[in-house]
Image 1 (cartoon, rainbow, N blue to C red):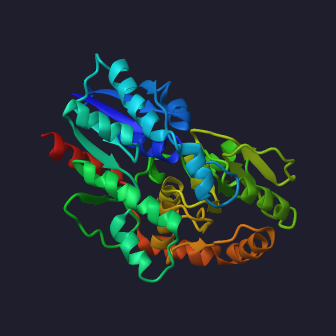
Image 2 (cartoon, helix red, strand yellow; image 1 turned 60 degrees about the vertical axis):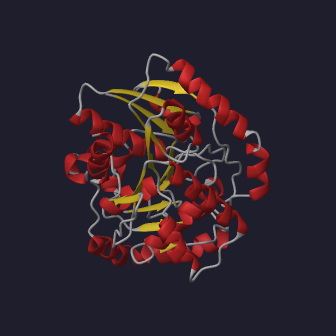
Image 3 (cartoon, rainbow, N blue to C red; image 1 turned 90 degrees about the vertical axis):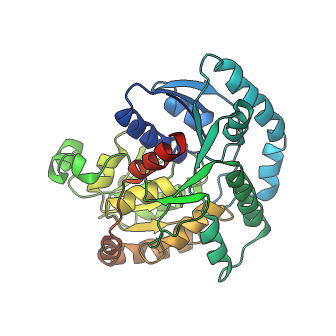
Length: 363
């Protein structure tokens, strides 16, 4: 069996989710041959783990907490050509690797390649069209979000089946949408004890994690948290991700990337993050209180926060004054939020459920 995974490289979340799915696949089918096609962060993440080829993909510009429609179009207006040549590049470089099935997120190259080769394509991505319809009934949706939603739905319609990891309590099924639990790399009970981890990291108190992912969208948030940290000297903060270029306060530490982030997650007091599904999934399964700043106009992140509004604290504003106010409130609400997360009883076995779908499609 040969399986090609085509993975978005805007951040690390999509790459880590597919790594979970690949690991589950290899565990069940050890002889399966896997190849990955990615770009930017996904290419760098996979290049030393599996046979990986580079393709072209999206550019999501900006360091603010908002997706700018004009900038996005300007950076991506040649993408139809890139997708066309990207598909050919995948096919040419992999001419000795004709996949039996293609697994893709929202990358058109994967879907196009599957069609060219006459193979089945499974899309795995966090955007939920049904949740979007529900959200629109009570919330204003701007043009940028409408365009994204229409685009994702169009891609979904081209796939054999769509697997959507979800935070929803009720996983209603759809003709081509299959809902699965959050995808988590390692479950909490598979890691060493908290006391052991605290000692190995040299922590005297549990830190608050600020997880930005692979993009620079959270840079302004990191700067504001760093500024406010000096006012909360009893707390220890660790920032993960982003390209930070400012001086950190004494109670703030910066780690650009680490494969051991789940060990930090296990001992964390709480988590501050954007609205990416991967970090939110891990925080929920690990039972952590979350302060979430979804990127404005980013339809998937907005919906992630919406689906979790009963279990996390959400802020739509990342300005210094609002972050200060919300951080102080968040610190007081941590015990309450921990109970809210616990009551949801999240299960991180999404990769196992993905495999069941994979078996149905391929057999």
